Length: 323
Image 1: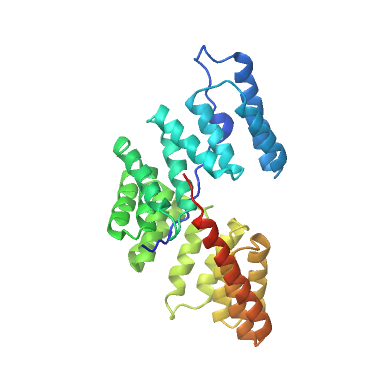
Image 2 (image 1 turned 90 degrees about the horizontal axis):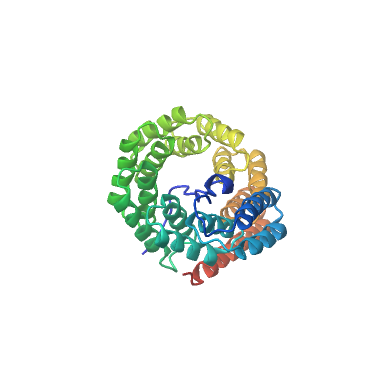
């Protein structure tokens, strides 16, 4: 079954110290509790500085502490995920849910992690869906969980179920920008442009500093050939102003500029995208289209070859087994 994620489901990582609730358990040695608080804080700072070596060392030290509580293991899983220790993170989230079936954030993080690794070559989208459905049975009225559930359904192309979940999310919390954004993006995916625009613009009003609604509105406007190119470009400019690291917005900006035959500007947008993520296959694909348009066929073939190489690498990574 083909799987396509249409929503930007990012793992919902909570601050280490906010969720480190270690009081009230007499079996925990106070020194271990204090050490955990300090080590998690140091690990968070190391990750902010992109110092993975230090963060990995702190992770190992935390693993030697004698603490057996759901919140500790949850934070260990968050840290493992941040370090790319996917197997450890998955096992940790499962352990948290087993010991505390009411731990909503563990369900959300576990499902998002499965979805981030899902492809046609594994069954991780199905695993994500199973996690979210189990959570939804316990928490039927949580909007952000319905957004997550809709994302899993959409990854499996269960469109009716996905749309129902996104509508439920928006209904449960009409003031949720995430729910409005998710519903608008999925309606856009289904081609229901008028309804999509209403939800996307609502998301803009609810979260003026969120770049994604501007990106989605640009996609919608680009579908109508009667709308001047300046309109979607203005939305994409707003998206990249709000989030300069928004790679997909830079790629889309390059596509719109190419259609307008503003090739030098398109090249600059792709340069930004490649600087942000040199291994993004979409950037290299778009670069190959640009070089063909410029008549630079050797460079076009090189970019196309790099695109295919990166796609194959992604497929190999997805084929690796996970718990």
